[in-house]
Length: 71
Image (cartoon, rainbow, N blue to C red):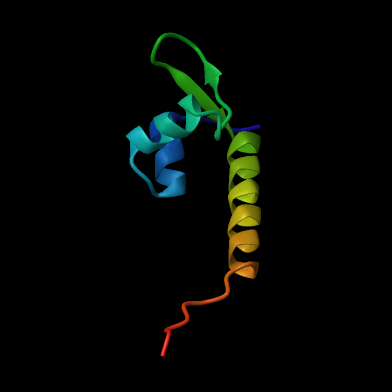
């Protein structure tokens, strides 16, 4: 199993480091806390996060009805 730093997880997700911290603090991304500001994110946690986000996106897309202009 691979373990990543927050910086490495941010590079994998192609987001800023602060956003990964937000995901961790809000519980959307599971992480291991090593100290006050040190976290590690497992490969499995990243995979589960991505799968959950894909499911939510798919649900949003399937319920999307499009923009209808009133005439």
